[in-house]
Every structure is written in structure tokens, then in C-alpha cells.
Image (cartoon, rainbow, N blue to C red):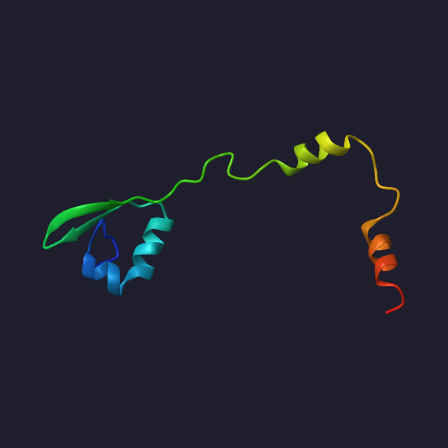
Length: 83
């Protein structure tokens, strides 16, 4: 197996998976071969733009411009008591 791999055998996949995974994480596509015949294409998953919700917008929609009367630290101190 070599470092500029665009092809990998089933055996490479079994014994050198961390290296192949690293290449996929870099965005490279890899052809998977068995007996020198291409049997599959390994393609990295590309995250979508809306994979994570916009928490700041959600917070503004729920709470508007209101501010908490007490800080989270004060609330936690009250819950803990005198421990």
C-alpha cells in the first residue's frame, strides 16, 4: 500500500483501515478492488450546511431580548444549598 492511494484492495481495507479512513477524512475518493477488479467506490460523506441547528436564532425566537433576572451561577448555588 502506498501513501498516494486512490485504490485499495479488500485486504488493504482490512489491515490498513486507519490509513484509508484518514484519506477519506481528507476528502479523497477511493476505489475498492478485489482480484484487481473495482467492486466499489468509497466516497467521503460531506456534511450538509444545515447539519447543526442555529441555536442563537432559536434562542432569540424563544426569548427575544429578555434577560435573565438571575445568573446561572446564582441558580446553581441555590440548588446546591450548603453542601
